[in-house]
Image (tube, rainbow, N blue to C red; front, top):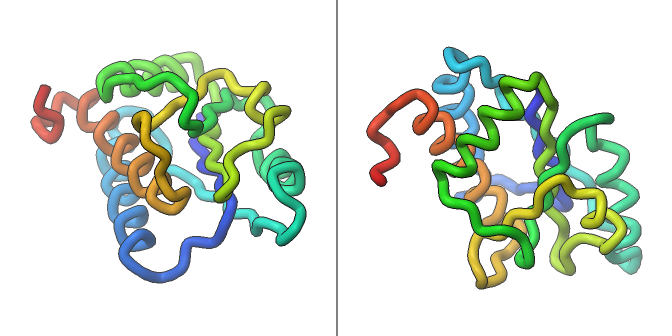
Length: 155
């Protein structure tokens, strides 16, 4: 199993970058004993003037073949953290790669979104794509703690 985050834009040094790194390191430590690999992040540059279609082409190049595609999209499902953890465990148990896709400021192209195995919304509000990375990294860590039976998640 591989876990990939494919995202438009380069995360510059700063608070968002520190948070993503921290949560992904925590995930790697907690997930190791659960059979969850460290998360790999692939960043693609948004092309000025190219829009969603150009970004979709770039994202498609870094998505692992055969991976379950999870699109981070405001129109998606709003799973609970335990539901998200169960889905991650299912992919682990079926030895399926998973790729979380985060679009740029304009979102994801409809053709790319249509390829999704699952679309997730982090709420009814729209979030900046750099904060979506932070929130996704935290939810991956939270999922690992739920699977490990850790008290981090208080239901």
